[in-house]
Image (cartoon, rainbow, N blue to C red; front, side):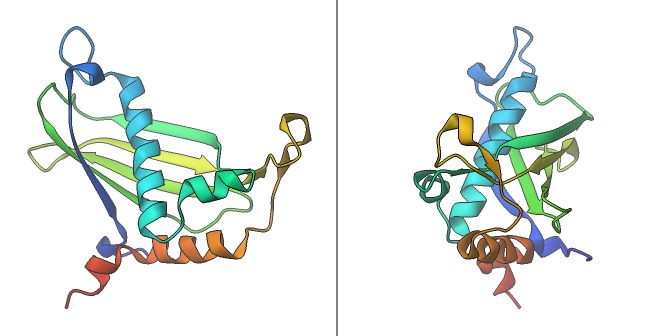
Length: 154
């Protein structure tokens, strides 16, 4: 499945002091937090609040992660985090993200694999779900299509 440029979901952030190390360079852990924020926000914009999944005992934990850093993001810089959902790979729900620096170049690229687990029976009864609930399946279709505001443009 070929994804178009319209399939990107965008989150804009500024690198703040709490995101950096002592040299003013964005700390690697901040990338992880922004990736999660981007996924939760995109899911919400697709019509499914992550909190609604959690309330039903469903979670989407990360089971795979790769970040390739190309250039440092620095304190004070504006960053656009672009993310898109790729087609399902078995039980894995893959996401691809790019951190775009103020110069428009890709500063880092990330691949994240999620799975759906049911925790409603308690932590010792954790179950990997192979079949997605209808609302999550529908949200993933929307996520793969891209934001409605972009799709609606001529």
